Image (cartoon, rainbow over all chains, first blue to last red; front, side, top):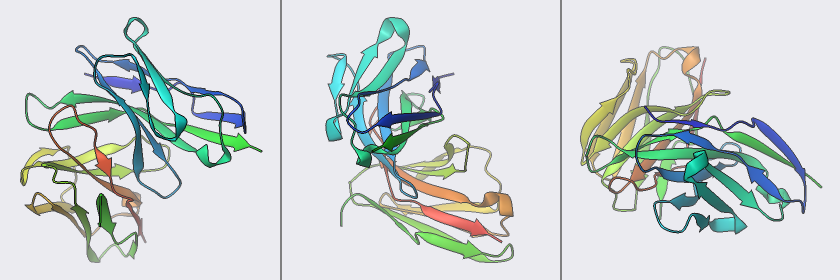
Length: 117
Length: 112
């Protein structure tokens, strides 16, 4: 069965500093990987996705993530954090539900990002 | 209106009440999902509907009853809930396998 681990429950950074959120996955086949962001009391917003091809993927709001198969990782990065980036971030691995026409997501526990001015 | 919408956004109900949550997707997707998000717990997939047919029920108690009249609408009927059912209920939709899911804003449910 697939699983996703986000080792950091809570990260604090200063505004303008760089950010890296870690994500490790376990999945037997080619993974389909996603990062989502959730502001308090809101739904999840898709930041970026990796299906195949270039292992460095760009997303919205200046985020990027790098897929490293050898390390089973899909870490999220941003070169300069803004106060509005404070939120909870979820990494997810997508699977095809038994060859059907829909997929399922397995989420990590989430990482809460606090941004200090 | 675009994306995935959910109503109501907030709901307070007693344990003997009956209420329904509504989700509507305007994306032309074929699959719709209900998730439960509780504090300090990972997202729990509750139900999946694909082309209006229920394909997954992850051991959800019968006090939660989903309904999918068409590919654009999804309901979650609630009755005789328990306080531990208080959570954020999220609806999502997707199109095809290996595609991202798009989420609604959620319904914050409080059971007294």
